[in-house]
Image (cartoon, rainbow, N blue to C red):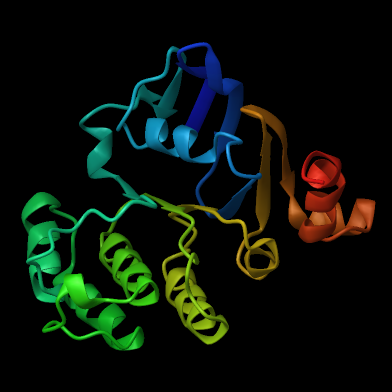
Length: 232
């Protein structure tokens, strides 16, 4: 469904993403893992059509990512992107105006599950409440691909459990879900595949059940094996 073909993104002389070739298929939940600066966010922004590769290309259903593909790819960035005057209701109306696949009923249901109300102002939300709102408005779209960049940042343990349940409601066989996170243990209960990236390069794209069976390691164990010596 989503294919990266030798994709590179340069910022000056720095290769933020370095010749990444990767195929992601529907029906899976992928954890995109790596330390800060590994290239996860840059790759996701290219897949979302927000920035262009320096070389190589990303394909959605066999066609280059473009304005048309944005109708089918829902991306949640790490940056705040709501106006300070907005209420939670305004955020929903804003998305409904921009995306034909946005379901306000689904949005209301997600707000209820995340204990948010339409009357709340975005300017008064805590970092955890803002994270919940960003997830709710993103997955209320009936997209084919969901990409969530660090969705669990700034959220306590119980809230993460709640958000994980909400996210998994939308992880159907017809959808592709890609989640980046530094909270590796949290992702162990969500993902069935893991994409490890290091210094802009793809290390491996693995089936987690096969990894546990054949290598006898968890996703967290494998993360430590790959990155432990680089993060000391």
